[in-house]
Every structure is written in structure tokens, then in C-alpha cells.
Image 1 (cartoon, one colour):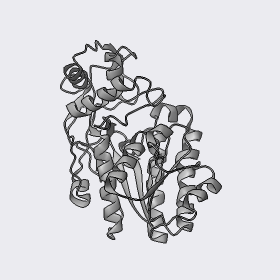
Image 2 (tube, rainbow, N blue to C red):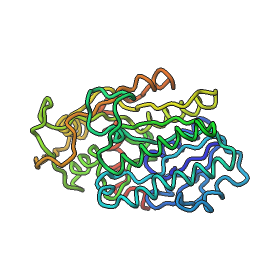
Image 3 (cartoon, rainbow, N blue to C red):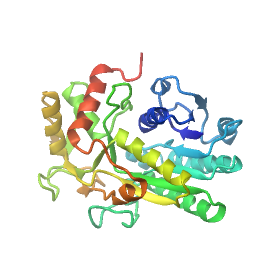
Length: 326
């Protein structure tokens, strides 16, 4: 059985649906602080908090869990700068608690939702897994700390892990059941879509970067492709595979202006984004090399183009203007 920590969140809920499609047995662990119970569509939930080991044990009790998928974390970079203590407690101490309870239960396989933020400023692109890891914010620092924790757990206790470094998750469930529902929303594609729909403001931060049109270049990966990569990681570990770290990205980048133009093409709506000064800490270009995930996990993204990511997200925002609220 698989335990999905943070399964009521954006990526976690898409993972839950993928596990259902694959016929896997699983249970979701979530405190619903930032997740949505409605996103689980009736899947088994244990309400528990990573910061409370006693509540975590309830999720493992009387269940034959062999793999943990860990999505539960605070993720906003700006918030991590303002409230680093909360990030260290939830993301690092919380993961330590989860690992210890999992180890007590005899779990030896762990898939971790990491991030490209562990790399910091790029020294080369595309960025592969051997790129230097020098995070520039507490969020990236907490994720890198957990990666190092997992390395030491493998060496000392034989707890094998796959650490998946996402670039920019995007899109939504093609069947329209699931989507992105953050408050506030900070990701680029949903913010541009919400601006097109007249529900939010949007500005382009800087148009003087050394890129093809002066705006930042980012690598986007469909949320369903992320779920497929996690399923591949489970198969890798269950077949006896060693611990791995893998990037999950598209291998190609799109500028902010290209995303805005694509949204206008897909939706037929005008965005009309105003240009604002650069934000501190924004890199000009962040693009992944995901060759290792393809070679070692057999990962084959179904939606590598930008347009399907926008189409699926747009359908979600149109059909669910209030998100998961009834």
C-alpha cells in the first residue's frame, strides 16, 4: 500500500487519481491546512499533521504501507523569506517526523517531491542533476536539507528514495475533475489565465533580461506528467532500484511573453499585461535536463507542449470559478 502525504494538494490530488487509475491501494495523509478534501473525491483520508508524530502514527497503524509519496510542504518562495521558521518546522522537522514514523513501520521506500529551487542561480543550462546546489531562499534550503536527510537514511538504514526536482508544475486534469486552487495564486500560467478571465491582476516583472524577448524563461511540466513520473519512481524502488535524484521538466523554456501569447491564442481572450520592474532573485533562464528520469524511470511526458497545459487549466478555471468550494 502507498501512503500519499499531502494528497489533498494540487499535485498530490492528481497523484491520487493516477494511483486509482493504476489500481494501486493507497491512503492519503493531509492536515487540510492548504489542501482540499473535495479534491480527493472520496479517497481514504487520515487527517494528520507532519509536525505531530502521534497523529502520523494513525496513518500507518494496521496498514501494510511499503512506499511513501511525500508532497506535503509549504512551497511559496516569498513566504519562506518572510517566515523561514515555519518552513523549517513544516518542511524539514515535519519530514523528519514522517521518516521516523515510516521507519518504525518498516517502510524502506520513499518518493520525495523536491524542487529546482535547490539549484539556485544557474551556472549552465539546461540544468542537470549534477548542477551545483546553492539555494537562494529558505524554501530551496529546506528542500535540499530533506534531500540530504534522505541520503543519510539510505546510507545508515537502507531506506531508499527517489528525489524528484520539479521545475514549474502546470495544467490540470484533462477530465476536468481536478485543478489548481491556491489562495493566493502565485504561479504564472494560472495568474495569466485569471487575468484573461478578469479575476486577477497580472504584471510582467522585467522585460530587460538577456533572453529572446527580454522576459524570464521558465520550463513547464504538466501536472499529470509529474504524477506519471512518481508512478515510475514507485516501480523503480519496488523493483529494487537504488536511490536516485531526477529532474522533472520539459527540456525547453518559454518566456513570460510567450506564455501570455499562448494564453491569448488558446482562450481567445486579451490579457493586456503591464510591465513592472524586475523582482529581486528572479533568474533570467531556468530550464531542466530530464534525461535521467527518462532513462531510469521510463518517463515519457504526454503533454510536452504549452498549449495543452493552458487548455486544461483554462477549462478548470472556467468550470470551477470558486475552485473546490461548493
